[in-house]
Image (tube, rainbow, N blue to C red; front, side, top):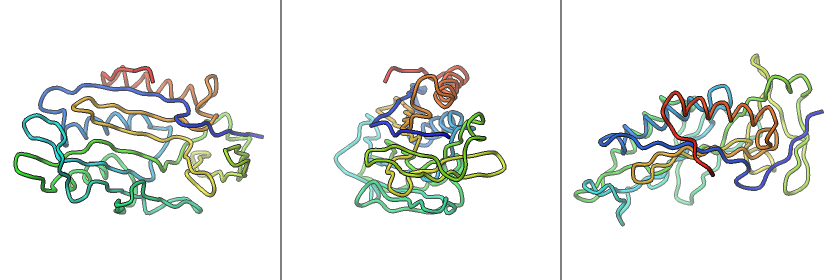
Length: 237
């Protein structure tokens, strides 16, 4: 029988970063660069079920965020098809959610492009600072799938629970957050810090967080693959 334990934040953190060329470090060019690497990183590992965007007004000349803010500082995008028992909740009090059939690289790019058209003060423009993926469906490594039924035992900060396992033609997956558990097995944050792009992957469950596990190795291999193929740098947490 497969069991898992939730790890306290940040779990096991995997991080990569890059500094795009001048002229592509902000706005949609930066979003395309970051999202291309993000979806390459999670290919075969997990599927986002929501995305949340933090926005600011930037000084057009310096690139620094200003004291003003666009109409929508926080905005969410949720998949319309999610597993039973899952609800997508906003992280911010004034955050509103849009809906799309699936969270894909293309759907997020189109969504962000629309939000960046918001107006700011003169000599300022709307830009993004962070994209977070809190709701995800995480693929269970094939070597564990044969030992799984409809649930697995998860130990978390409130005790233990029988957590749902989803089955499809490709195998098994676990979606979260779900039920009493407030963290997904894998969450991601993509940030733009004055032109430095970073992708942080948080492995929150032992099946992916613990060194030596099959899930940990999958993430390590994916991180190395993106770093080599796309020129990102693996950084220490």
